[in-house]
Amino acid sequence: MLAAIRPDSWNLPLFLHVLGATLLFGTTATVAIAGFAARARRDHSALLARIVLRTFLLGVIPSWILMRAGAAWIGDKEFPDKTPGWVDVGFIVSEPGAILLIIVGILAWLAARKQGVGRAAVAVPVLASIYLVALGIAWFAMSAKPS
Amino acid sequence: MIAGALNIAALRSGRRPSEILLLFGLIRRIAVPAIGVGTLFLFVFGLWLVHEAGYGYSDGWIVTSIILLLLGNAIGGYAGSRDRRTAEYAQQLVTQGDAPSAELQARVRDPISLAGSYGSGLILVALLAIMIWKPGA
Image (cartoon, rainbow over all chains, first blue to last red; front, top):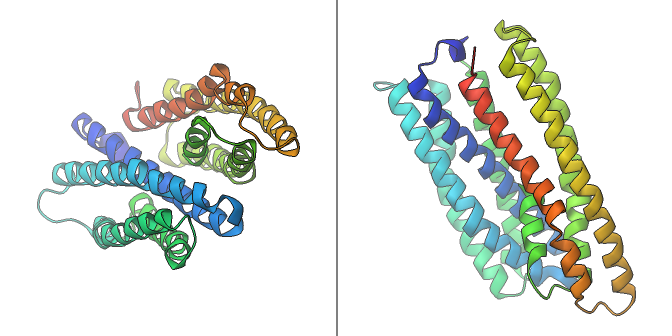
């Protein structure tokens, strides 16, 4: 029933956070799917590698910023002093996750330069899938709020 | 998001029919089933949550959300059926030499199809806003 007693001033930051997280999940899934497709369809691997890179630059990065800014905004309002464990799970996923995303971005750029072939092209969808699992864990923590 | 990103990629000028076919094929094989499963989960668990949280099924914001969910799916489904015909046309062109085609490009950029695809996405954003603000609750 938290939603029923949530102050109106929390709605906008919460909306931006959830929207950013939703877009982040979708764009990361696109990176993973296009990356795996590039391995399966060698005749179109260059095209799919470019799509992976563009999706990363124009989708994943802005979504992560929106998600993280919204999280900081709503976190300051809802928990100004100490954050509960389920919020910490979100920070654990978003902060080290950003490092993983930077690695994905560098590898996506290398893969696009090499026309979607090579080790970088193999690593991108695998790392993106790992990040999707981490996002799924954060998603559960944010929704179910264990403890 | 997956369908949108692949659709945007297909809009680029000079795409060969085999490339359009690949992108629309990924949408059909991966994005469309994901949308179907997601919508089913959203509907079933959403109604369950309404009960658990103590809201009424006849509350205005809940009725509006259900209508928007059905509307978004109907619009997206209609756009998807037009895209399926475009993919079939692309398949024909692949067998005829796979050269870029102005007709195919026009079909990929069909304004009705694009409005349906992106309109259904915007409806989902509106749905999220209703879930957060709960107008009238």
